[in-house]
Amino acid sequence: MATSTLLIVILVLLLIGAAPAWPYSRSWGYYPSGFLGLVLLIVLLLFLTGRL
Figure (cartoon, rainbow, N blue to C red):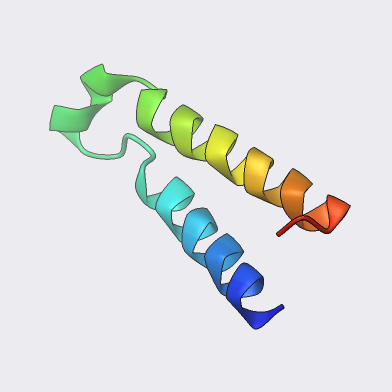
């Protein structure tokens, strides 16, 4: 239980950190945060179904 909670917290922090906030990363669009959001969604679904 503690490992999965830690994994979710790390993924949330990565999702926040991937937002294009600096001038050089604005041309990236939302691809980094979109990918991490998808990974977070999959992990959350696995957590809720009890498979994680």
